Amino acid sequence: MRLTKLLAAMAVIVLPVLPAAAQDSAWQGQATAYVWGAGLGGDVTPFTGATTVEVDKSLSDVLDNLDGAIFLSGYARRDRFVLMGDLSIASASEEGMVPPGIPARAKIRQSSLTLLGGYRAVDLPEMHMDVLAGARLWQIEGTADVFGGAITRSGDKSFADPVLAVRVNYTLSPRWSALFYADYGGFDVGGSHDTSQIVATANYQVTDQLYLSGGYRQLNVDYRDGGTRIDMTMAGPIIGATLRF
Image (cartoon, rainbow, N blue to C red; front, top):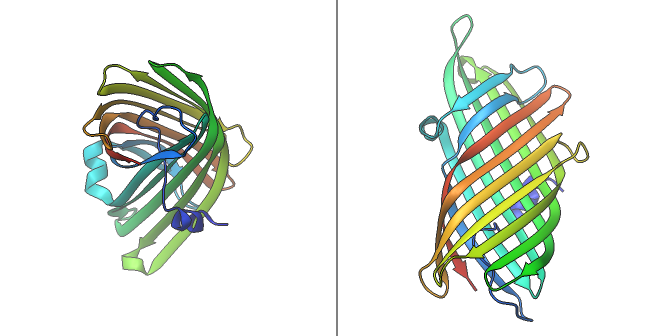
């Protein structure tokens, strides 16, 4: 199934942002909407025959070229069994000139969906640690046109990478907690040479159901196949609001 169909089928997505509740035989979960102020760096060749683009954009540069973005997440747990995931979709475009002074426009759309399942290996009053495994699914779409669309080239790549992850949550006070999450995958098995992610947040409990979080996230991918090359790092601050149920 194409990644776009998988994304359309997802109604609740998850990201390790907040601590899970105490052990219980019933399922417990949370859903998060968040903003990720990511800068971009790396090299992208979106399709065979396209020019390799060296990307080095700050957050302000990204916002200038951003067409739209969606970031959703969540978490579910029953006893020691946990489910997690994260959905990130961003689209950006840029206009300029290519030699010998021809007007051109390029657009790239990146979607990633991380789905994980795992086990709560450590469950102490002040600390919880989950170990997980799953996959990160990618779809990269690129389009370039010149002369106002008179000449157009486009291409897309979809691939999936196996991922191993660890999530650690520390209780700092009755309302404050800290979270660290890290994953690594690829292994030249699914699609990319490697992919990795780190998330670190401080979390504040506003009510029994509502939490606010702030911190830092970095997502990396190194994918090369034929004429397509995607070696990118997306990193920056995140803020989120989570509803627990």
